[in-house]
Length: 336
Ligand code: NAD
Ligand code: UFG
Image (cartoon, rainbow, N blue to C red):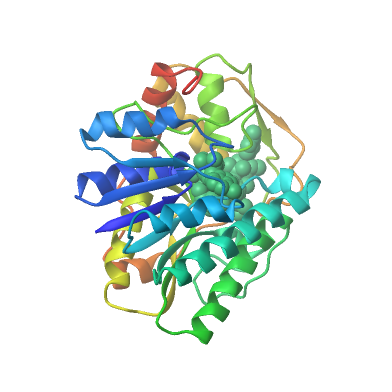
């Protein structure tokens, strides 16, 4: 099968390309490299010993995208490309709407034109907004609390409208919880630009001495140790979820949504302790004010993905920290 992967040079995309090459898929990546490096794809090919095709293309460049479809034929598309920082999206909302929504509409129009109607879309648990209870199921009410989240929700709605208008589409919405970790080879991993927003990349950069200390955002939440609880899912498990979703699309399920998470949460303090175990030394940290907008507890009910895709997360928090530490230690400055 030939798969077009948008945003395939990014964190989750590169790990998914690796697993797909290993399972025998043929891959073409389009990415404008606005938040990634081509080096990730070079390493994916080195690790697997298999080639992929890369086009440096922006989804906003409709003509360039058309050329990719005109020059090849694809069985399905996995759509990772997008801007993803909730905080940044509050400062530059129009850029988020333009990039994520217009980019997706361009992609869908070109796909429809070339008769490619099988899509896996990178959604997020952010579409549940502030869920009232946990674990979070796919049938919970939807609602976003920042422009980034609204782009994800709007794209889900656009895809639902598209499917209503033409039910020959097959679309899997994958709602990721907190993707973390790195490939066990230590050769590809997350390479955030600037200061990381997310907990684990921050912890990893403190562990390697690139940042002085971690700020723990609040320890007065109603949780056992007072720090927030999240559902951290290893990126290799997440990558495999995309392969299972592609297989599901072969059965013509229509429009389907799945949570990809681990069914359990870890607190910030538990994450720090697990990383200290992995790297063998203390992670300097200090409790500061809460970060606005953080929910106390969020974790998935991922049983639907288990039932319908045969997928479940296999890797533990210890695996996550060991793999992230290997990546960070071997590549203290990421791909640069
Ligand atoms: P990433 O930034 O590492 O990867 C996204 C890729 O898309 C990058 O390589 C970037 O260069 C590319 N891109 C962005 N806009 C583009 C455009 N207009 N044209 C072409 N390429 C473009 O992010 P990631 O963590 O790998 O996330 C992948 C997807 O998963 C995103 O859609 C993100 O919103 C979603 N997601 C991520 C998380 C997370 O915490 N990492 C959680 C939930 C959902
Ligand atoms: N945290 C810290 N210090 C840091 C960074 C994070 O204490 O330096 C804490 C946060 O307060 C939170 C936890 O670590 O309690 C996890 O924070 P992340 O930023 O890693 O993850 P979030 O759950 O806040 O955000 C994730 C995705 C977003 C998505 C959101 C949806 O990164 O893209 O889930 O809820 F929008």
